[in-house]
Image (cartoon, rainbow, N blue to C red):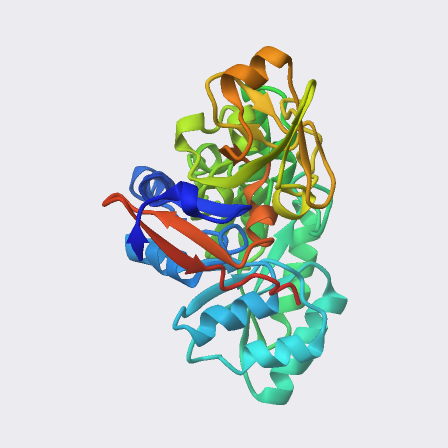
Length: 372
């Protein structure tokens, strides 16, 4: 840990303002008391053991992961309640995670009987009980069974397998990232919640108990949490927020905790170039076509400027002569709000954490590359 001098940091670098992150975690956890729901944040945004443990310390009930290797990393470091929010079908991965049961709680995703049978066979071989949740499609049209009777049909087949313990349903309204107005987010959140609540109701009317009813997505979690019958929310990006969330009106610019620090390396009459390109900012403009996103990141300077194009190591900012003279000079360091924080984090080995006492702490991105 060193005394703060952000401008001595070699660039491009990942900058995390700790106080903003803590405020965001508190905002995330505030729905717990407000709506009597559990909060299970997603690891894939921050990929940090330390941040995951801070979320648990603040009151999170467990952690959500996207991959088997993310789960193993957390299990090896003392996190004992994990939802794998991906329908694993590789028996080797399932075996590795089942070996942690019952010392730790590992919840598997199922979205077809063929895939559920693979988990069943692994559990049977290891003489384990595998806890499973059914993934429900609420409009993202990725993984998941359709709400209602299709959920019930899979649930009915699942409970016949004694090695599988069906305890919940969950969904993810990732298409909310493409919303064009606040009312649209409200509509998506309503259907997200209803797809789970109504599916659970159909199951329970037919004698199948559904204890956990979980929804996710940062744009919708605070809205979907309000619906009666929802027991859990799983925000991920809310730990940092980013350009997409600001564009959606979910967060204010001042709430964004994560930026990329870059250096101006060249100035021309109509553009300047920074040392942060696609290998620092990614080429994402929002995976679901959000129209509010401009360029590949916003510079935090007096007048809005955006990274207008990127190659691997170069970011190009198209500017006028007045903007160059007034705002940007050679070797100046600039902070950039990335469009989507989650893939950006996975491009760096370390965070530079700006602490309230004026010091900087370098913190490892523990889960970088844990994609298997």
